[in-house]
Image 1: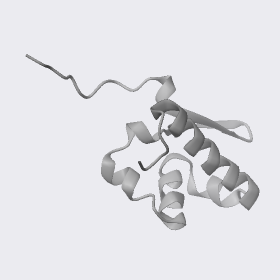
Image 2: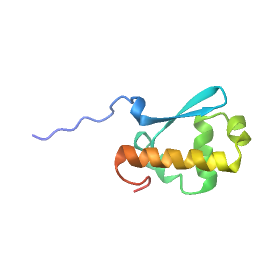
Image 3: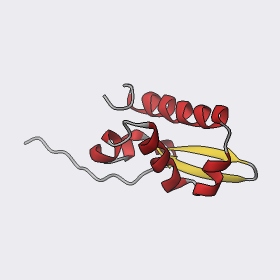
Image 4: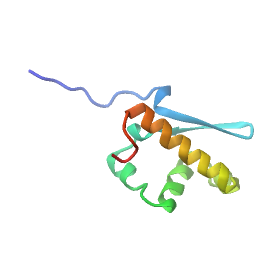
Length: 89
């Protein structure tokens, strides 16, 4: 009989650590999200809302566009690297 066990506990490789100033924040990679959460990141506004769930809104709002884009790209690259496929596929 074939078997699969789901619901593994997250580990440090399931997150992107983001250092902003003297604080650090852990953002779950795409593989730790529900399919609906990942699918909902299809617009810039929804991506911003996702980040604000894991980094205080005031901190996210203080980022310049270059830093914000670097954060989104780092998250996407880390998700791709962990899963072996681009985020959202």
